[in-house]
Image 1 (cartoon, rainbow, N blue to C red):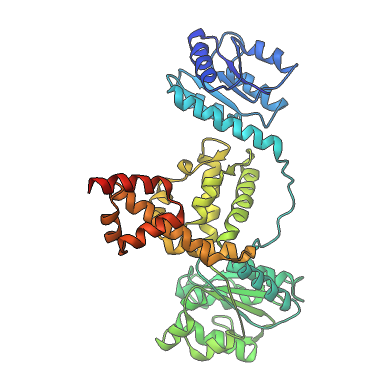
Image 2 (image 1 turned 30 degrees about the horizontal axis):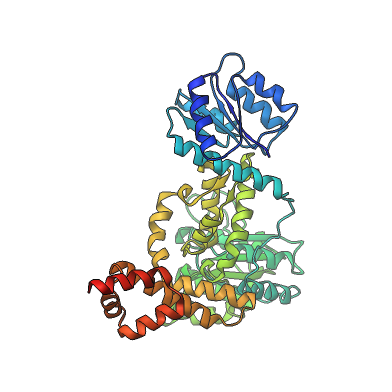
Length: 472
């Protein structure tokens, strides 16, 4: 069995870690210098390496560099009594698993070593193969419907309206529709109509002639001309000003437009794909969006599900984004622990896929070790997640989705049993095992509670309940 290697010129540190590891039955070897450890590496490799940073001769950072060149997946924990910024940065840039400043809590050090050992075993058992990622990721039934729709529209020139919350990937779908269409060889031009001031939006869309307004020193082609023969993606069309809605309707009606200040009609051969996070029907009723324009763009509608509706895709997306961020930054790809994955799958992600991608980039930069635990998540996510974690209905719905998609049977009985058992156990714990009080809180008769305790096999609570009842 592989062992944990301790490299430190300080005999007292070696002794403390030896005793702690021996107490935990973790095999170990100790070395007083980096050179000794390097010689030993010619014969065997450790499970985890824990090295001081400043030692006579070769430093821990130099050892880290050489070890990572030979064994890139070996977790190395760097210790130092000099808790300065340069040392921390150098350690992490060199690929250290964790940075442990002295003096350290022994229990914390052992816990860190155990985490590193788990990571080492995971590296040995899982050989990850990097494959080109598909343009859009999703295994959830709701996303499979989107993929089928894209496939059916592959040879179509029809106008498409994509709806969905912010961050669900509307532009990705628009781009995919273009790439799989007969217009794929022509330009795909995207414009966010909500991000451009309304006084500039007309010129952005249709272009302008020289001298048409102050500052127009030359003729400019607008997005319609730039997209000629291809696809024009109008994002957040629900926020388009009324006067621009009128001009857009005219283009969609007769296929012609005029540059700002122009007098010659320009023919537009452009496929329109529009997107919005707004309820366009409601905006039509409020008089904020033209009904005739709505019907023009609402030829084929694609609705993108929120991330809350496709929670089973969160692990897949997270792995992809962590790998993507690692490649961009030139660092080792980080992984989510099982507990962290479950935690993230229970969150609502109001920012949807975009929020998850930003989170994965943050974790790639800021998480202290290769395996990401719940404690490594940013504070704001944990603060926002508290209500979501308490939302047992959402958790129940997610569990039901997982089981239904898996093809399980007897779901109602099993979940009901677990639900009742959890309530009774908590109620008995709350009352100190007093069944009469627990039954009143639960709204059950005492006999009913006693019967359910027996049926559900709540042995420990049952016994404590008997003792408490004697006291009553």
